[in-house]
Length: 368
Image (cartoon, rainbow, N blue to C red):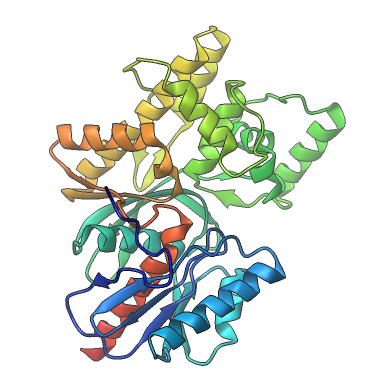
């Protein structure tokens, strides 16, 4: 039996192997929020708080921080938070005493996976999720980061595409599929009326509320729509889960083509082959399985290109059992050492753990 950490009033600590100079606090993400403390030679990951979308949940977030600080009799000097300027967690952190350490979302995912496996850099981190604020101001989510002792390098990422309506595309994945096809120069409406089609096309042409994303989570949404497996996200991950469950009913070992050029993973060949398969009436479960197989092949090919033997599998997409197991098997077969989450959640519930480790790294650098 595995005991999950960070639940209850006396969570098990993570030993970090050295004493830190002063206490640290991290405030987590806005979804599936947790907080974390670091003091002495340990990290404490607090209990699940939830999504910071209501005044009550934000109040609970602040109370949890106060409770943990009082319980362990510390006053943090540094507060780590996400770089996203609109995160409530970050805004609440700014209101507290102490200096602020901004941590990139996907870097935090990677460091949480290192902590969970009790290992050190270097490593290649495959960080795939739905949304994270990138260093260039766009929406990241299909990242392969080279983690070093000093920080990270964005080694590869998926080709970006626009999200018509921004956050609205997350809830209405037909918009995501529309933006993906538009970027590829393909024209399919998916039930949009003539008026809506014209409005979407005008918005995309003029770049009005159509932020760019590299998100693998949004690719899952788009493929679910294209295949007709699911067109809904009435709860987080609904379309992606439907795609996963459908793929599990296929035994296909085939995959689609893609291109690695410079630091870009280009999905255009894969998209066109998916559409060809749809037009040819290939069973949708085989299409879904081939999509999953392609993602595993991408991981191995990028790992070979980067040259790091240790590969971290982290981010919300790796809650997908089929994707995780496929990637582990493919990496092992290719001679790599895959690492994944065991106690700390791979999704945003683990962000606080990664933020605290980033703050510890920064503190060590400043002490040198």
